[in-house]
Image 1: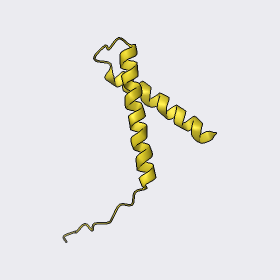
Image 2: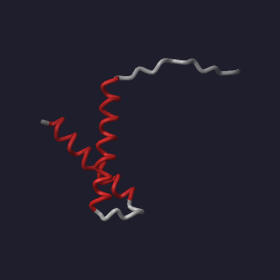
Image 3: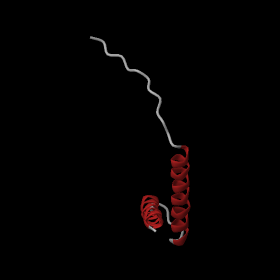
Length: 66
């Protein structure tokens, strides 16, 4: 029996998407700041990204809890 997939529209919350985009931009900027603070040392991009992501996520969580 052949199974067909139906196309269902995906609902998205524009405000949530905007926040996600803003969050990624904040992470990107913070990761670049860390890169510069560490003497522009190449090869640590993942370390910088993960640190920036943790910082931005914690800051967002504190704001949401307030």
